Amino acid sequence: MSAVDLDAWRRDGFLVLEDFVAAADCDALQARVAELVAGCDPGLARTVFSTRDQGHAREAYFRESGGAIRFFFEEAATDRPPAEALNKIGHALHDLDPVFDRVSRQPRFAALACQLGLERPLLLQSMYLFKQARIGGEVGWHQDAAFLHTRPSTVVGFWMALDDADRDNGCLLALPGGHSGPLRQRFRRQGESMVTDTLDATPWPAVEPVALEARRGTLVVLHGLLPHASAPNRSARPRHAYALHLIDGTAEYGADNWLQRPDLPLRGFA
Ligand code: FE2
Image (cartoon, rainbow, N blue to C red; front, side):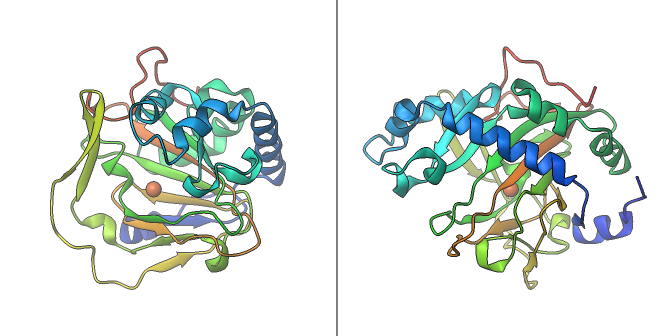
């Protein structure tokens, strides 16, 4: 693998690496997801995502998803067939599904994690993101370290475009250099519930957001402190993506992180 531009990484907090993911791997993930969706019994997921149940079942379904493969629906779309209504599948596809395991643990990704300075990379979280045509919802500005927190902060996101992603179908948006600022919030467990703490009220930096347009097969690498977002998909085209989050096993992973896997130890690339 050619050397990545580490100066750009340190300066911007993101990298856009075209043609990093083979077309055959994009095909394999999309075909596998079609099978998972076809086999998904939407009953439970629909129940917990209907607007009538904002409570207990929904929280438990999410809380236990760190070590499972679970289906999350767009709020307003629970009456559609799952293939047209899903928001995402998560959060342990990379450990529980053989196709996702193989693609997630390819040597290129391991080499890249090493170049980015992860000493003992652990594959913490995986999400298949649908961003459905016309109804795919927006994702507000956030830092991934707010959700996946280590001391010191080490989380890195590998975001793979499985469809061409552009401004019209809700590509990633980022604030270049914003990773040099503090962590603003933490989303964490408090008993059975989840809470969001404000750690630092510093506003996002006043820089122009950049649209990280990405052709299919592009890998976007996101620093865990980089503020990023994505707009709703108002287009007639889906914007599927696969996101994998890594942490460094040398850092401390808090017991109050939302994602806990008591029965499924974290693994690296091996
Ligand atoms: Fe994110």
